[in-house]
Image (cartoon, rainbow, N blue to C red; front, side, top):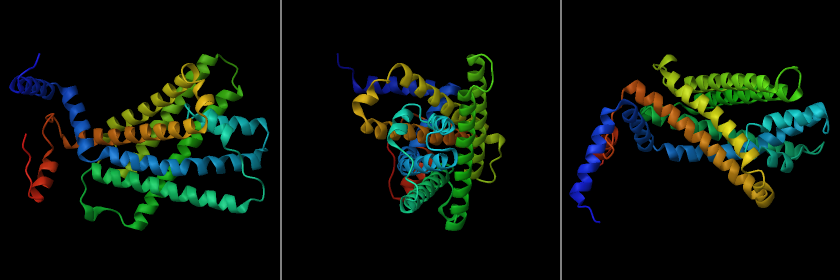
Length: 311
């Protein structure tokens, strides 16, 4: 049965009008559309690329220094590495099998890994700063110079490093069996501690990336969505590897590691983009939005280019 175009259009207009009058759907549509307007997916891909450049050198250096300090085959080293790789629950086991400590005295490999890590990490923080600048619709002349951008990047790296370190310590404590209590109680305490770490890390990162006039209280919705969303992704990944994907890594090998890591990093990047847009839409009260109409900013850009939008 073929429906007339006019009937389909009226039905879509009715749905659009309904969603704009219903608060939750109006806000969600505004966040999704604004993320598209500000090229959120493109910036998420850029963050994923630089994140991929950073992860392997970071893990290589981490495992090397852990082996040098605690001993290559010590139980403490194994627990520390397993705790660190818990942040990558879908592919952490395979990464542990394929990345090993550098041989002692291999200064060239150590320096090369450090340089790759610095290049990828600063690229990652630069992409996050540009994405946040675009999300908040700040004018181009307000973009920070290279010195300020680098200092902010190093601050973000510190936040990321401290949050990963704190999460590693929490996971290591749970695996060490220090507290003689119920495994369920330990798991709940670790989950609560990890949630606090994720929320604090999101708060500090968003405070660094957001305009100065935006208060910390205004950032709370995005912080809650981002921090708790990342916690949910970590636990969902752990469930999948234990119950659904435990046989796939043996079949696909290193190919599965790379694809899994790209997928995992992109999920985290997309989550951060949407968490930022939640704050932007809320602070600017940029809702409701029509399903088929661009934002006023996009209309203004089209007008500057001598173009017009026809619905």
